[in-house]
Image 1 (cartoon, rainbow, N blue to C red):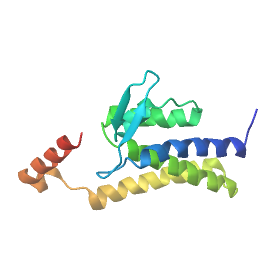
Image 2 (cartoon, rainbow, N blue to C red):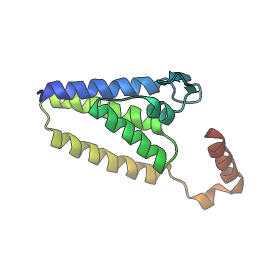
Image 3 (tube, one colour):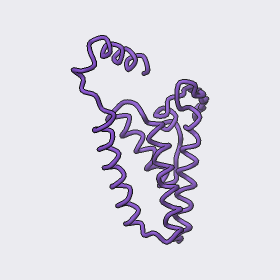
Length: 149
């Protein structure tokens, strides 16, 4: 049975592998993936949620990442690839901090503080009230949203 830094490194490696699989499919110029299941059925897609559902993931940390993408897809319907890439990067950076003798509790507290500050910044500096946008802008937003999925 393994413990400590070895397990953390294995978790980071597994999660990074999952993130690398979907990373190239991100964005409007993302590449399609061709996936073949056990029966030989072929699926061609660049949708992160679909790619992750078709993968047979065995590693526990990687499974959590796939479940995270499923939750994102169920709650929002988009952003699964971005969530996977972001979560993998946060885990990778946290592992580096642990290697530098920073306690995991402090790392989690730092991530929570960063989340609160990011939400506060978005709310104060980037968010716009819908009634200030105008009808034409809202129609264009709706068209964009409906054409992306």
